[in-house]
Image 1: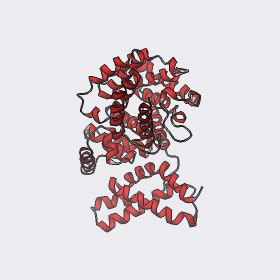
Image 2: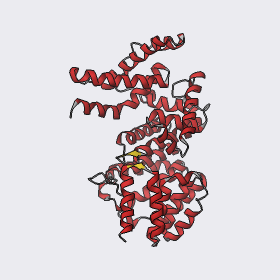
Image 3: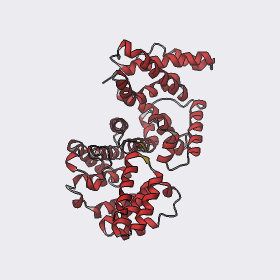
Image 4: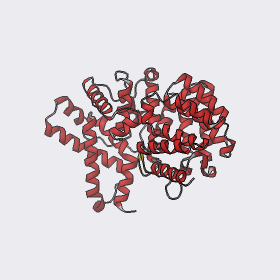
Amino acid sequence: MTIASRIDTIYQTESRRVQATLIRLLGDFDLAEESMQEAFAAAVKQWPGQGIPDNPAAWLIKTGHRRGIDHIRRRQTARDNLSHVAENELYTPEPNTDQIDDDLLRLIFTCCHPSLAIEAQLALTLREICSLTTEQVASALLQKPTTTAQRIVRAKRKIREANIPYEVPERKELPQRLQSVLKVVYLIFNEGYSSSEGNTIVNISLAGEAIRLARLLAELLPDGEVFGLLALLLLQDSRRHARQDANGELVTLEDQNRSLWDQEQIRSGLTWLDRALELTPAAPYTLQASIAATHAKAATALDTDWARIARLYQALYQRQPSPVIALNHAVAVAMRDTPEEGLKLLDQLAGHKAIQSYYLYHAARADLFRRSGDLAGARTAYQRALTLTQQGPEQRYLSRRLTALDGA
């Protein structure tokens, strides 16, 4: 592997940690991002001649920190900002920090401060932790990009002006922020598990980061929903190697080679689910983990207990009503009963404006139309879904489905 390729890999695996630490050291989101980019630019220039350091992340943090201080001095920013970074000027990061001192976890709790609106918390964290574009964040939250951009800018300003501390709160304050933090980790995993754009389905680094953060939370705050979330992520991620074929093409759950599922990860997920069921058997993440466990226990697609999955989705919708959950419930009903029954439920979602921009809604309708024999309806729905997704494998999958319909 060339040094350039290794730097690309380091960027994929370490950039989020580097940026999180720089935000703590420099006290400014935008400056930290700029300094991180400059640190990687310096690495591209220096490492081919000097070699890659033993601890690349530490080198990048130190380099980015110095660049950030230079920027602050040049801009003649407020004296308190300069004194803040001066205290940390000789900071040398350790490769293995204590879990509670993890900078990514600090950053998530900062972004999920209760003084910020929940929409702003989610948008800011996805932008800063996942390095998603504003358009990707908007897609994940089913929002308009302009609205998302405004929320991110206002959230950064409020953190700066209100001097919101960059820290994991005391244990007695953790429950107040827990739901926001769990939702953020869940959305981070979703983007890693199924990238919103690009030519790969899974962003292994991002999905792995979400699982690592969920494990940290399980240690920091033993709670049924934390255990449920960790179980869900492990069970979902266990299918990673079966979700793309050798050519990088999408393989749906129904057609996956289940021998490729990670059985060790499934066992770990089921263990965490058992712990969650003892504490929060009907809580949202525990219910979702129970759905994932039902899939994991099915030896083949035909063995799937769709009746149980439909019941679980119905229970989930009662506790967390959303059009996406209603969509998944409709698909489960279709698999349990008939495609026509599922389509009736999907038709009830037509009035939800956000769901009309969600490609999986149209892809689900297309699949049920196809199964019911309505090829014209399937064609229209596949075409609509195709216009809404930016992910290469998903686009090619939908195109293949359309081609198959034309030949039917």
